[in-house]
Image (cartoon, rainbow over all chains, first blue to last red; front, side, top):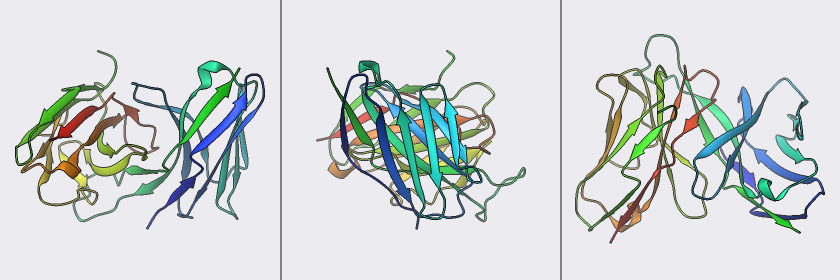
Length: 121
Length: 114
């Protein structure tokens, strides 16, 4: 089955870059995602990358994908105190079960356990 | 509201009781998902709906768990004969079509079974 692994904690100094790593197992995943969860709030999609891309940049965020090694990373440049949160890596899986409805299957997500990003002043 | 709404935000119940958790997705979103998040864990997939029907219920842990979405909008997750191990935050998410995995999550319903 699918499995997504990530380290549980990362501590960085304010202003430095943070790099959060993730490994996944399902080579058929079409997309890979980074979600952010702040205390008391729901998960929020940060960014995602299509599986045929190596890199995606979005302002302070850079996603790197090594499909051969099934390794995904999220780099946050100039880390701020507001970046303190839990970051979840996720891969999609497609469902084509017996009760599939018209319009095709739809994708669910398998999440890692999350990396707690701690910012030191 | 504009986001996914879940009620109740907190529910404390006794072992053996029946519980219902409600999710109101973003208007127009056809795909709706239920996840369960235990302390220190990532969200664990339970079930998702495409319209009114359960397109994949492979994540439901056992037959005490059931979910419905009768009109293709609001969904209810039902848990019978609750056990202490059911204590978790139950997250609902919706997606416009379900095709890209861009899910919009609610804040969750925290269930505590005493």
